Image (cartoon, rainbow, N blue to C red; front, side):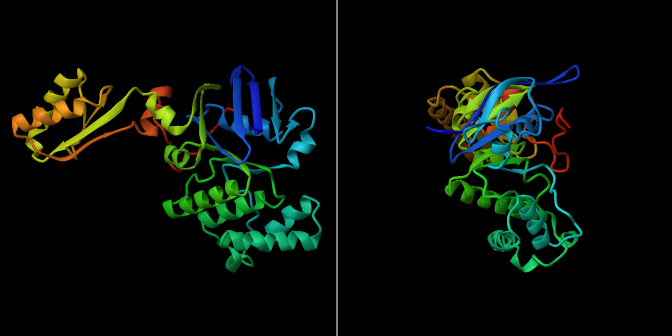
Length: 324
């Protein structure tokens, strides 16, 4: 298995603050590596180092087979980067922005225009290509920013919280585009605070907290780390929620979490056989349920268990990394 991105022991200090404290990351070629972490965890610092924008104080990394310290120019020629904010010139049109990026990449004017037109079509922006960016919606700007990062046909693409602030429809559009890129062999390193995003896109996930990788694996592996499964039940009669909570406590030795608005009770279980015992107890008590299920923990629950912090920040508060 070839690795498009491999980092070992990355360390970065900003004054007395340790932003990275020995971070290891690995992304196989043509895969999506999701990097999760709360605000200030070190996600953006990691991306900036791997993009040769920052020099690590210790550690080493290769990108597309090239060393980030000894061969930074070769690395830059093989990567694309979409940061937390759309970096486009609002006074230029969409086509002019892409042409500018192409010329900065030393493409001929003819090649840059052709590549720009191809990407505008691909990202559903062809009809808006001659309009100034200041007339674009947030989703359109984000798609153009992603298109700009692909002008040089990168082998590795860094997406640093690419869907922050987007509405669900625009977010889904970006997700579809990312999936298409990996189908074409592009390797993607995706930082995000949206756990659903990582669950939907990432082949593997690394969780960073306080500058260290505290967990890694597939989404289902991280979910299992919380211990067993989650049992949910919503009794048909709201006035029997307390009685059901008592039964769950007796069966699991754990006080269930109760949503007072919906009447849904949730409790972690290590033994799925408890479901059968619960059904018998409910039947004996004459209690019916509108909802009864046994599932793996969500990635949000896994994230909370691993880091002790809630998963996603509000959409209008992107990560303010220690590198910023």
